[in-house]
Structure formats: structure tokens, C-alpha cells
Figure: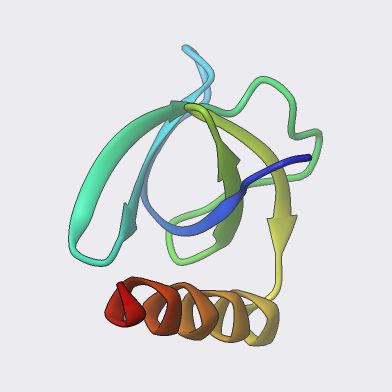
Length: 75
């Protein structure tokens, strides 16, 4: 099972295949090696263990982040 969390792209370095994404105010540098689509700041990526596993649209990102927020608040 994959536990992916959406991250908003803040910065991209295509030469070194990494991006900085932000989720819940936390920024993290991740690998974008597995994504074969164009990535630009403002895009959302599904992130799993430091790797972007795919690009997702804003609606899916918002829905998923809302669910994560509900889970985190329930604990």
C-alpha cells in the first residue's frame, strides 16, 4: 500500500531531478525522477518517501489534504 501525500511545488531543479514541495507549511526537497510530465512551481505532486510518484490536479490535492487534516486532528 502506498501512503502518498500531496505537495505543492515551490521550486524545481530539472538538471538535478529534484523539487521542493510544501505540505502543511513544511517544505521538503524530493526526487522527481519518476515523473515524466513537465513540472512547474504551483503544480501538485503525490509524494511517497521522498519521491514524487505522479502529478495530480488541484481538486484531488485539496480533497486528499482535507482528509489528511481530518485524520491528524482526530488523533
